[in-house]
Length: 156
Length: 156
Image (tube, rainbow over all chains, first blue to last red; front, top):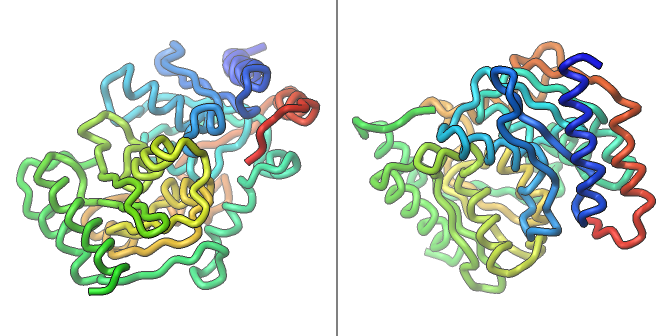
C-alpha cells in the first residue's frame, strides 16, 4: 500500500465507522507536508447541518487548526467523489489535489443526490427544480461598490 | 417595496455592513412562514473558514435554530447569486425558492471566483485546474455496503 492508498484507506475507515456512529457513509482526510491536518465525516443528520459533509467538515477543521482560509499545497482524500457543494469548498480552499474512492454515480445508487445536483447545475435556470429569480440588481451592486472602494480589504 | 424586496434589501444591507466589519460583500436571509429564521454574511477571511459564505452560514444557522437538517418551504434571499458550493448547500437543505440580487458575473468583476468555479464544474475531469484522481474503487464501496445494510439509517 503506497502513501496515497494509506490515506484513502483512512478516509474509507472513517466512513465505515461513521455509519456505525449514526452518520452518513463518507469520510475525508486532509494531508499537508506529509502530515494529517484534519479529518471529516458526514454528520448532516446527526448535527442538523446539511453542510456537514465529510469534505466540508475536514476543510473547516483544517483551516481552524492552521488558522488560515487557504490550504494551498494540501491534498484531500475522500471516500467518495465530492458533491458540487464540497467541490466548490475545495476550490475556495485552494486545495490543488484530490483523491476519490467512489463516484457520484455510486452515491446516487444508494440514494444520495450528488449526481442529481451536478445535473441541476448544468441546466439553464428555468429548467432546474429549484426556483431561482433575480431582483433588485442595481441595489445589489451597492456592497460590491463598498468592497471596491475599501482600501484594507483581504482578497481571496 | 413588496415583501420579497424587503427581505432582499435586508440581505443587501447585511452585505454592506459586513464589508464595514471586515467581511466579504455578501449577505443572505432565510424566511419561512413569513418569519426571518436566520441571516448570514461572508466571514471567510474573518473566521478562517472558506465555507463561511453568506448562504452556507444562513443555512447552518437556520437548521441549528429549527433543529432540522431540511428547510422545506423556506425561501432564501441572497445579495448575489450563490456559488456552486452555496447552491449545492441550498439543494441539500431542500430550499425550494431563491431570490438573488447580483450575478456570478458581477462577483467575477470584483475578483471573486464564483463564475470560474461554475466553469470548472462544467469541464471533464482532465481539463480542470484541480487535479482529481480515482483510486481504490472497490474498497471505497465498503461504507456504502454498511449503509445499505443498516436498518435504522436516517436518509435525506
